[in-house]
Image (cartoon, rainbow, N blue to C red; front, side, top):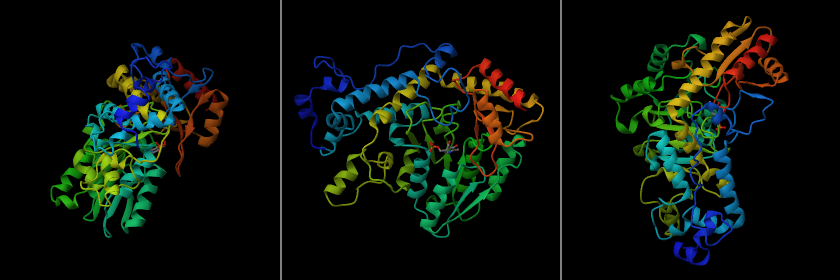
Length: 448
Ligand SMILES: Cc1ncc(COP(=O)(O)O)c(C=O)c1O
C-alpha cells in the first residue's frame, strides 16, 4: 500500500486501468453499461450460456453468469493479469489509506452503490461478503451478547444459519431455541406465523433469526408483518436490550418486488450468486446505519482506512464499527467482487417488478401443473404471497433422490432439499420459459 494516486497516474497511466492495450486509450475502470434491450424474455434467457440440451430448474442453487457479468469479470481479469499490483492498489483505493481520504471512488464502492440502489438503502450500509454463510457468521459472531441472552430461530432455516447461531451461542454462553412457524407448509398462513412468533419471544430473547424463503419447503415469510411483532416487543424494552431481527434473505433477494431495506430487519445476509446473478463467491450484508455499531468485526477489513490507521497509531479505532469494517479483508478474487455491480445493473435494466412478476407467473404455472399430477404432493403454498421461486414436492412411493435422478435421466435438472426431512425441488426462474415448465411437468407425469 505504497503508491499514491499522483505517483500512480504519473508512472502507470490511468489508461492501463481500462484494460486497454493502448496507453492513449481514455481512462475507464468499469465496464460500459450494456445497451442490450431486455424487452422480451427470450433476450434475457439468451444472456446465459447454459447447456441447451438440459432444462435448468436449479439456477437458484448457484448462478450461471449472464453475459454482462461474464464480460465484466473478463474486463477486470485482464486488468489484474496485466498488472495485479497497480490494479488492486488503485481499484481498492489503498493509496488513499495513509492520506485518510474518503473511499468513494473505489471499485468496491461502485458495488456498494449498485447494491444499495437495489436494496433501497445507502452505500455505507452495505458490507461485501463471499456468501450468505459468511454474512450470517459475521453477524451472529459480531453481536455482543451476554450469558442469559437467548437467540430465537425457527425449525425451517438452513444448516448454515443454525450453525452460525450455534457457534456464536457457544462462544458467548447464550442459549438458542427453534420453533416451527407452521406445521404443513402447504397450509401455512401469515396470521399463524405472526402469532407463533409473538408467543415465542420471551424476556431473554435478544435476537430473532428468520429466513425470507425457506429452501426446505418453499414457504416465503411475511417478513414485514413478522418484523412488526419484534417492533411491538421492543416498545417495552430499553435500547440496549432490544430484540434484533436477523434475516437470511438469499432466496427472496433477486426475485421479489419488496426492497430489502423496507422489510424492517436489523441485519440481512444474502449471497448474490443465486437470484441476483452476481459472480460466484459473492454476497452482501445490509443493515441500517444505526445498527453497524452493534457488531464487532470478525475478520480484519481492507475497505476502510480507520482500522488500518488505528493499527499504525497503536490505538483502538476512534469511531464505532462501520459496514465497510465488516467486509472481510484479505485479497480476493477481485474480478468477481468488482463485477457484482453489473449484476445489479442487469436487474435494474430488466426491471425489478417485471422480474418478480415473471418468476411468480412461471412458479404458478409449475405449481398448478404439479397439483394436477396424481401421486405428486405439492408442499409449497400455491399463493404467491407465501411462496417465491422454489417449489418443493414429493412423489408417492419414491424418495426425493429417486425423483431427482429420474428427472435427470429426462434431462431435467431438479434438486433435493438438504434438510433432515428432504423433498424434491423445482425452481422456475428467468432462465426458463413456459414451454420448459410444461416439459418438466411432462417428464414428472411420466415418472410419477
Ligand atoms: C436458505 C439458505 N441459506 C443459505 C444458503 C447458503 O448460501 P450461500 O451459498 O450463499 O452461503 C442456502 C443454500 O442454498 C440456503 O438455501
